[in-house]
Image 1 (spheres, one colour):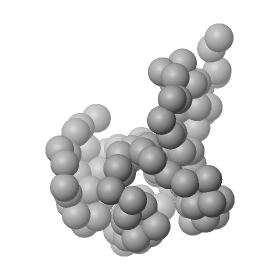
Image 2 (cartoon, one colour; image 1 turned 180 degrees about the horizontal axis):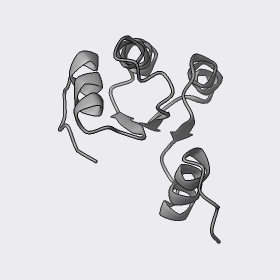
Image 3 (cartoon, helix red, strand yellow; image 1 turned 30 degrees about the vertical axis):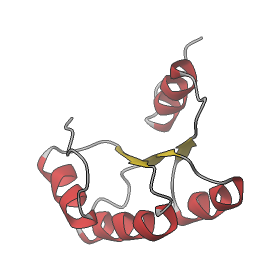
Image 4 (cartoon, one colour; image 1 turned 135 degrees about the vertical axis):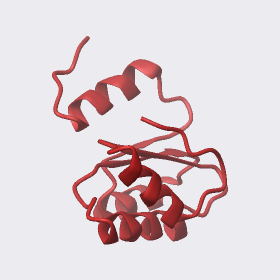
Amino acid sequence: MGYTGIRRTPEEIAEHAVRHEAGLVGLSILSGAHLELVPRVLDALQRHGLETVPVVVGGIIPERDRAVLLEMGVAAIFGPGTTTKQIVSTLRETLGGAPQS
């Protein structure tokens, strides 16, 4: 597991995921650039052989963009107001673990 910090390029994110053998990549995007950045990250992950690593996105994602991101391959989207319990449950399901109540 590792935190890359803010303002990383898609290539830096993919390289970090490779280096740390990531089982999941989480992106926090508050800039509104999710439709530009997420495909670039997905492409970088694919170039590094990590196309099966789930990607989750958090931030202010308009409802109209959620379906687009999911169609791109994003595993889950967490918007404002998502509870920690919801996040943990979704991550467990995404990673193949049993959901806990």
